[in-house]
Amino acid sequence: MSVDRRRLPQHGFPRPRLPQHRFPRRGRPVPRESPRVNAARKALLAAGPLSSLLYVVATDGVAAARWDGYRRTEQMVSELLAVGSPGRDAIVPLLWIYTVLFIAFGIGVWTSTHGNRALRTGGGLLIGYGLWNIVGGAFPLRLGDDASIPLHIVATNIQLALMVAAMCFVAVGFRGRMRWYSFLSLVLSAVMGMVAFMAAPGPNLVLGIGERISIGAFLLWVAVLAVVVWKRPALWKCPARYPTEVPPS
Image (cartoon, rainbow, N blue to C red; front, side, top):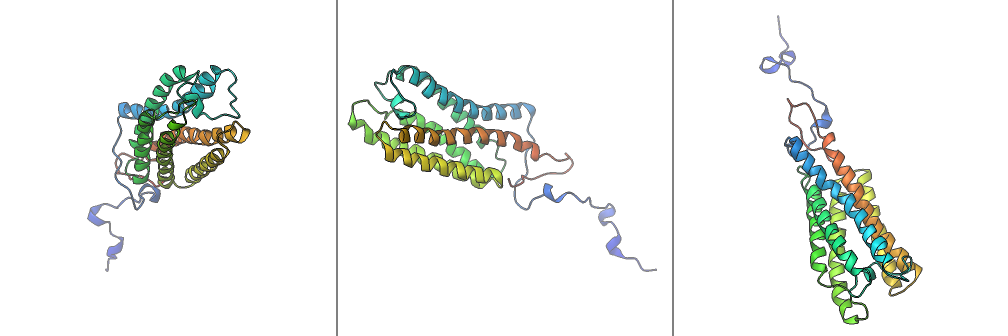
């Protein structure tokens, strides 16, 4: 009697057939997170939406309210931060808090990557963006002093370069809707920023509204990124008896 060896179990036990989506071709094993580490990571990610909210409150809320005659729809946000601005003393401490929150958010993204190099690089660039707030603070605008404008523009352009690079790497680290949303947010922020730049020095509606759309697109993107990365680890879970790898997003 002949026996078909192809039907015999190998090594005495049949090999389990696992869902294909649990084992993508690329990726690294995901370490198990303890509840304490997971809670710390989520706390860092939560700092992102908080930083966006604080920025809006600090600029168009607190600082603008202290400047009689300031027109939010026609004047630049940079004027609120300038030396000599009536609201500068109130906004500077809030912006320090914003910087700390944003750096914490960048660390949260960086620690949530689990082998996704593009997203990890994006998290590092977000940290750099937050740290540059400290450096850029040494080159503020000074009301009535045109000599302060060139250095301020250089510092701002470096920060914008970090922002663009971070959004690009984060977009590449995802697939699907988050990738398209990141690129669309980047395009909207860049286009409206250029429109506002061409409308400077103002005051005019194109300058004030254009700059706020540009800034708002980035602030909203930060909040959305925090929510998406917050939810990602739930998609990576699998039975403990089998190792898993990070699925491409």
